[in-house]
Length: 476
Ligand code: UDP
Image (cartoon, rainbow, N blue to C red; front, side):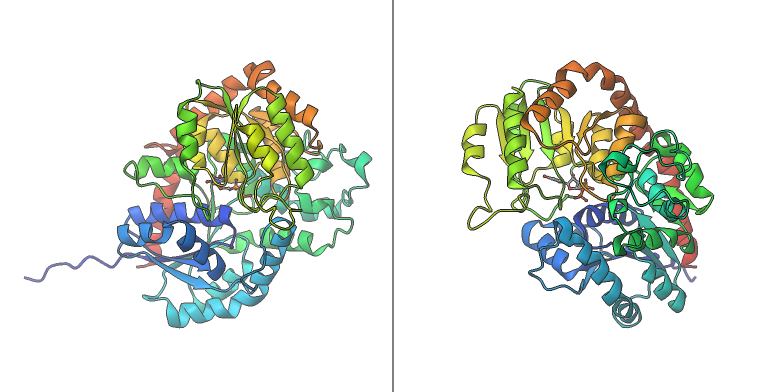
């Protein structure tokens, strides 16, 4: 008697823009889909793939565990020695947009086997929809930013049409913006995505972010790394344009509920310095502030020194991530952390080039996070129930920090404050001592809601199941 042969698993191409925050989130999604039995091809830029394989054994962790998992690479169009950090990062986005479309099409036709049933592309690559439509492949977008930042990006055209941009100098920064529905009472000019600060509303970055976001309804669905209890009202507004939204975050918490412990993915292009965990183990409970600026933000040498003085003068313990490329105006061999910092830090502070951030935030010695308000860092802090000092730099960080400070009451928004040692000292003391009570209740509450959303029957868990089912139905 003939036996029924089960259908082959659906094959999904996952394609992030080449930025660590995006690659990390999409790797987590790839892992969740692999656990559900889907076959994944992960398309990385050559540059990022080289870094992932050189510094962290990320790739083999996936390919060893999941037989159907493969990595493919594609150029981002820039030379390998391009810095790809700080303000130079915009060049990556423009380059990817111009060189990728024909290459992607070619790969989908010739290279990637078996044929792809569904593409999940970064929602910042509208050209992927054109390619997918041409080849008749269903496509779902994944935006790695918050729903609130997505919605602000989405509404930029309305803000411009209403004459609310450009911003007229520093004195105009506290003007309320009226044309982002749901945010009329608290979104000031200074809280808009950083590219809105350009003098010319037709600036190429505004155009890029605006048009890419506006193209979202063209995909069959939109995946967001957030959860309904955090961003419900804004999600309702986005649904009026993109009805099929899958909120499946926080992804790192979701992974912990679906992947056996110890198997979670890593977060990085740098070698993780785990010595900080041993240092944390020796610190009393809830005494350490963790300081990190994510993977691409850069600080001037002067700001780094002010920050260091402020941290030391606060008399609080601190764990500080000083990436090898954190300091923008380094010269000669000063790519290293300035000597004074290292020597002067020994008593109460500890520095590493790259930390196991999620573990750090969950360590019992840590009780606050000084962050640049990147979305992954913000969500990781929410999950761990850590209050934040937000010192945002660019893109979505301005919006995220406003929500942290004003809407969710999870911390202090320090945007546009200069790095003055006195300000740093006072703010650290406010978060750790003086104003602590203001945040404890909301951070605890939101952390619980985050975990609830990814547990059985929670909103993100149900949405992930729906996403998997929808992908399965695309392959039959
Ligand atoms: N990260 C880490 N170790 C560090 C600093 C950062 O693992 O020492 C991770 C962090 O956990 C987060 C990511 O790097 O997942 C940074 O992403 P985010 O969106 O916060 O900022 P971006 O790098 O995109 O500016």
